[in-house]
Image 1 (cartoon, rainbow, N blue to C red):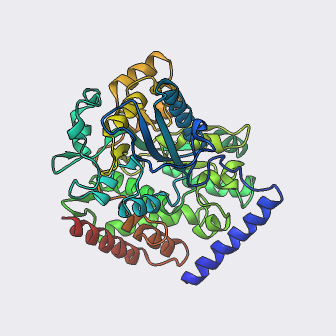
Image 2: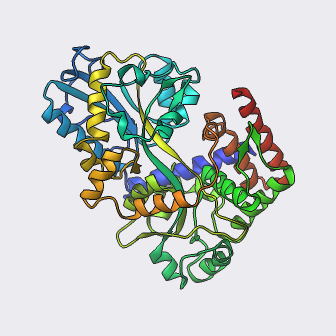
Image 3: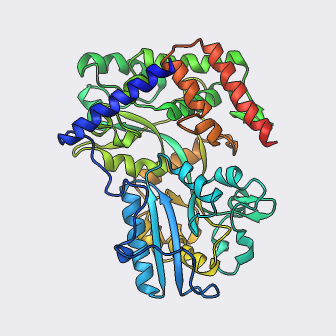
Length: 457
């Protein structure tokens, strides 16, 4: 069956390539490659990425990397250009791209001692790449070079391993439900407030709009997080507790039955249909862009990217958390941080830049592109600027009020989350492609999660 899955994906990719050649594909990101440079550095030769004056915060070369969508790239590049204008002795080389494949890129760089000086990282990467606290530069060595007083101690503690501060928390983020208002109106429906309304909407979409319209879209990892939401709400306990999955096989089978209902009731497209669309992420999927896929369970920090991907006249609105099976329990965590390479030659310059971006004038330019800032100074600045509002802010507030359980730091480990070989993807494909029995799927999930958790103990 795996060959069939691969052939379906390749067929979709070939179709989309031919459509793109005819001008019928999705909008391409202007920074969709794996690297780019700030305007001030365009056309110049790459340097070694090491600072020229290790003892100075005001001169040298800094390599900085991040992932994201067009709006994040543009805001970050603008802020970096402004910083270089104010600090002419500093040159910043920017490496940026989409999320797809980014973890592998960084893993390769870290293993080869070629990582950028400043890296945007996922929270769980400190456990994945620095389980002993030695994989990134210990920021406590430079506590006077950055204003750490702007951060709650509990957030800094979550970024600390074995007493070593691995990264600066950029923002918190939570999962929320977002709906394409125009498509729901076109179907003659209000956006759903419950899972029962969502399940009832599938057949109506099919009847009124056509087979290719769905109330919601979800890739394999989205399904994993929907499963987590359902389980935590239904059984009132965290996904993982004491280093093991919290649910029995029967309980988890109930969760897989719920996911199957979503597909069977035409609420979400099958994974075969999603792969056939030929896009590696939902924001690049033409069916999402034009409103055929009319809903998401998405990070609040990513909703600007999703909204920006929509065609003119399409708008995302924040939905309520369904409470059909108990008290809502969404996923909420530190979204990402900025870490320094353990091999950086000029941490003073790196941290001066980050202080500008996270606590200083750069905050006005970056806005909410990485979510609601963890920095108190940034929150104050954005509030005074009238920018601490809108869909990202409202979604983050809603998520913070509807989360009850702390996420395991290994929930997003690449052995589970990697698109090419992670257990989440394999199990969700087994469900959607192969229609495996829910109890078998539950056992696969229990085995995969418990094996990983025990390996980290």
